[in-house]
Length: 523
Image 1 (cartoon, rainbow, N blue to C red):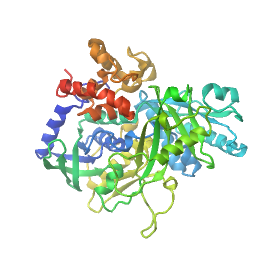
Image 2: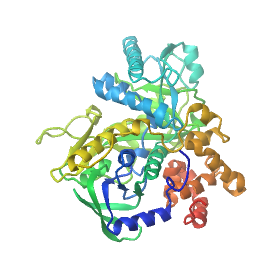
Image 3: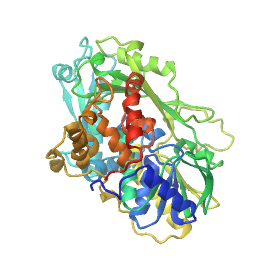
Image 4: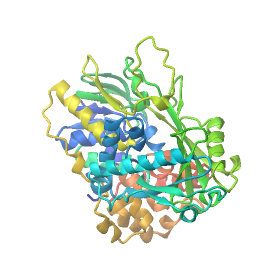
């Protein structure tokens, strides 16, 4: 699928479609929330032939969907916890993304688990067995070996070759495994939203749902302050950790997952990601995730969060210290607080299924990652829980529930074989006349993004020193990806904003491009 008027989101389209809905047009389905799940619901419903409006109080991927580890994983953790159905579902959905719907955004990523003195031989044997069980999951999901190679053992020399920063003293070797890695989680959401728009969905950011009922929602345009109503035959609440604000009966226990951002040179060259065992834990690891843009992410934590849900979660110093301590247990290089150039935290919307009267004690790490689809007595469908990898299945279940609850006439789910904007077979992607970095982010649209810079040298310049993102990518975001302000451009369409220093350097360029291009859709 290529760019064009149908899948291009921009300010003028937003104004036109919001006015259409405010004028009384009734849609089949209203979706609240434009993270991965909400955008997935919008695409699923629109692809079944339903008329759809999808709204978010902020922006595409504003919440949890941009704060993940950027992994599309096969559910090995859930297999170890005995959640076989969740593990299999994860493996199936990983294969769908890697081989059918988004091969431009998800690639195979190798990981090394170093066998240090902190990993006992019985523990190593258990992990090795788990990795082979994970490979059986891959096979059961019909994901090819060419897409995801199998696990194997590494000698100490091979381990150090792939991960030179590892401490050599006592290193017995390592375990090599493979999983799916997203080029960018927020770009997946953007692709979902644009593909939904290509199928006729109204995708509207900066539109807040004030109250829901089975016939629609009272809404407010956050840009103008104007209030109104969107009429719908069915409503899906996909607001993630904010879903309880629209359904007081919903009981969520948010869990915070924190990542650090390091400049890659501070850590050293890595030919693979790392699973570093957490000292004193038998089945818990910290991930080291090279990003290919001069940054490396380190995460993640799993801590319960109490109180009101913030728009942007803060990262406590205790999380930073914990992650640095785990790194220090396995690496030769000494990393301190000054090496952390950025940090981010996401809140997982875990459903609390404890009985009324329970004190809710216990680790959020122990709560199931199964998603749940709930229908209120009024007929509003809410989808919560789950994880990024399984957004498509969550969306399918939510649309099924809405269709059943409200008696909608809809076709069957098509999204397991529906390519997202930019998707193509690997051989076609490899032949595109564009830099590989752009192909990994834009797929078949990469030559068009590259051409913007080729036509205007000013747009070919990086937006921040040492960062690969160019001004052309910001213009593309304004013309085609629904970006409305500098935060959309720097924090979500690109990830420049993950490092405050880079964000500050790019703000001037973003402001100038907004003045020039904000109201000029692609010719």
